[in-house]
Image (cartoon, rainbow, N blue to C red; front, side, top):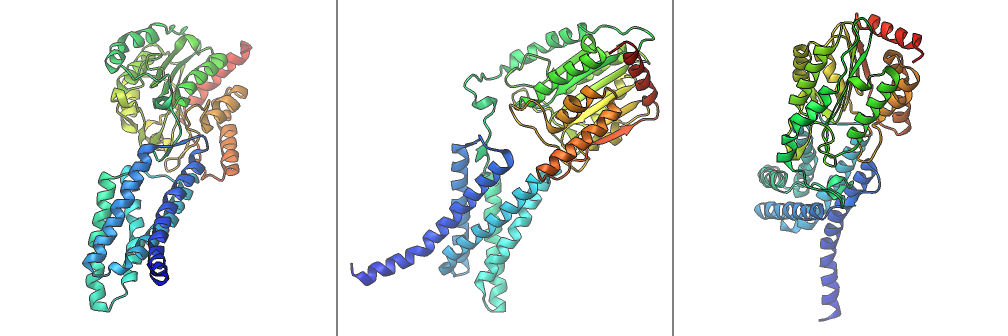
Amino acid sequence: MTTEATTESRISARPALVALAAVLLYWVADILAQMGHYGPGGEIGVWGIQSALAQSAVITVGLFLGLVVVRRVDLVFRSITLVFLLGTCLNLLVWSWISRGGSFASPEGWRALQNLLLLPQLALLVWLLRAPLRRWVVSGVAMAVVFLGTQELVARHFPVEGLYYLPDDVADGDYQPVDVEALYAAQDRLMTRQLSGIAPGTPGTPEVFGLFLGGTSNQSVFLTEVESVSGILDDLYGSGSRSIRLANSNRHPNRYPLANRANLDRALAEIGKLQGPEDVAFLFLTSHGKEDTFSLDFYEAGTTDLTAAEFAAMLERSGIGPAVIVVSACHSGSFVDDIEAPDRLIITAARADRTSFGCRDGAEWTEFGQSFFDLALRAEPDPRKAFAVAAADVERKEKADDLKQSLPQMSEGAEIGAVLDRLLALRSASGG
């Protein structure tokens, strides 16, 4: 081969190498963005890499076929390069928004954003064609059909999941698959153990009945909060003998009854049966969430999430009296309008349209849980005053981390204050 031929070969190979570099940059930037959001200590999943390779290949083939249709194959490497570079920029903007507290109200919302991000890439492809008007319209339509069809194929059959993830129970060496049949067989026994241990209240004496629920099985922080909060309330109000714990946990599936709708309904009914008009039910629910939905996620057990309307109906059926209800989850403020009542104090970790933070496997507390229970309530047993301290602490932490404010909420019914005052006065008089 002559020197001239060798030089020509190197020059022609350069666009392909640049296109390949753009594809690699797209995925490297995505991994780095996820590391920045989720934190260090994670792993890059083999399945995620395979999915990324498959997705890149499908998009590349789609671009090639589209350019074949419009007879502009000469633009193939330039198209790949520019589409993936633009995709990198758009992807980083989305991750930056998420890291500052942005969220999607539903999977449909996320899909709508993904479709919206395709429009700048499609516009770029059409601009590359730069043909006379009549041909430009025909070529643009043809390119749009092929490009958008390829993206739909990618979304349906080649989603990228687990590209970067934090190890959880499934990755632990001591993880044992959940025996679902045994899990459900144990529910009546586990619930009986919880309910039979509840001591009835003393008539005329204000006392606290506690219900503590951790909804998501694959992140241990929710189980940890259930146990920590029940301990704090026992120290503050002596609720230990009148406490019910429900928790979904991959690692400890039989420690407590399942946090599912049936067990929650039964637990609330038991409290309603035993609670006197002078007593306070303290209900704490911690998990993930979205608007009007609280996660009761235990994949192997097939649990179903709790809606705000369903929770309101359970509270109504139970007949519980005065209550402090703390819902710690993203978008938990959306529950307020469904469950508020004159004899209830409702506290949520976030406003209806905001996320909360700190849901990590291995963590001791979520951010709100730590601020409200571990910091504020330990020092100030009045939950109304503790909320103000906690909200300020949450705001301070989120500003320090440059996060979009979660804006915890509190709704105080007209009748709950007097009940809480009597409870706190008795505690103070008894030296509690």
